[in-house]
Image 1 (cartoon, rainbow, N blue to C red):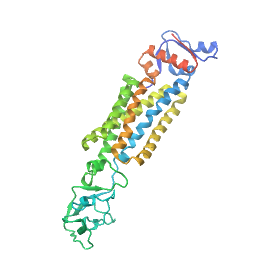
Image 2: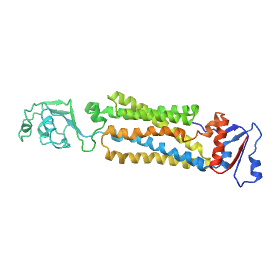
Image 3: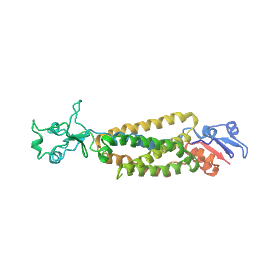
Length: 344
């Protein structure tokens, strides 16, 4: 995503207290190209106009961090074990909210060497009642072991995740990693494509269209009917999430003079990191993956309003030879920064 540097127009921009010699230094003949950074030297590299653009774009910079890190919580793998028919069905009516560990597990599920119940196997024995399965000398035959077809999840840490939603357990555990990988692949595709699109159609339009897509896709994740749909949406989220940050990053950095570009880029990265940290706090109180996903995604629809708040990149307008629009924004910047500017 390139930054425009030159245009073909004549301009004079200077400070209120500048001398005639400073004005003459900036004069160019009609049709001679000029450097936009030279104009910023006199309009202001980080005046009120540039600062407003930069700060408004800090708001959307907050969300990509939350989107990237959300899978840490929505895709978390809780402890799980086999559902024991006749035992769990009766025990589920108990007043206990989490009955992952129960008195009858020793007689119904094999235990591993680390003193945890086997996650994928159970004894193939039919219990007539719950009390029978809790007897100290209940019959257990190590040769009568079968695989699980239903599972019970430990909800002490997470009320629900995509693992509990789609039963990504045992032989299907690899699917949890797949959902993470497709997101990263989507980021690769988005980084290679969306920057070029923003160069073609402009920062404002590209950002607005992309943020609508990102908000819609991340919201759609919470309503995924199956794992395949979830992975497809995750891939598209990766494409739009990286595009979201790249577009706003370049848009914001283009607005300021070269003296402040590194600082502004660094601050955007810091805001991104703050979004990651805040997500941890939000996830502490929202343990259901669907609700957490909606809390992250729904507020992003409000970012569309930035289309009417943040001006188009002047550098991009100059690069596309849209000089009349660039001229109006330069004059607006000069007025807001309390500078004088003449452009012919």
